[in-house]
Image (cartoon, rainbow, N blue to C red):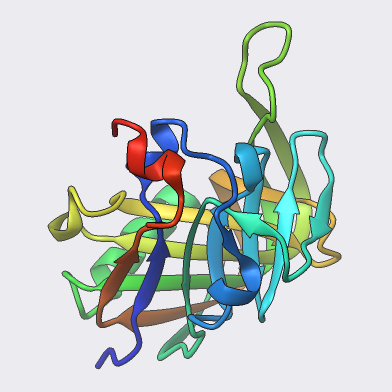
Length: 216
């Protein structure tokens, strides 16, 4: 049964309202977990946290390690202690995610998901720091036959209104040079680790005047 919880800094509504300046250091966030996902300062890309280290994936296609002093506006993280492991092979993400939902024994609990292996394809969407000439705010990437780690969460509909529901996943390749928000993937072969999370703690940045004053 689940014993650890999910820690969330700020809210998706705040991000959508434009509260995107970094307002909490990674050093502080990492006291609440060693694995997770987040948004970079000024929404200039995606943050993936693996094994206690945070990485920023940018719309220029580059991914870099972040210092513990870096500040970010949004994050979800937990202490990685998986309770279920299973190997999957040659499966599209739609089928894979439905299989997980049918196999998972705790239908109304938060689930931390980590898949380490080789992916036939990984489709990524990374937020631009500024809109492109065609006004697009995201840049799309596809990795082929790439080895790495997919990490994130499944949030059941019972949490609707509290946080974003469904699957929310990020990816980092083995060399930590390519990653971002996942929009699709196909697993060639991968070790899937699942972890039930017993609680959701949402902490808002009460010291951030932009958060306090922006209508959300």
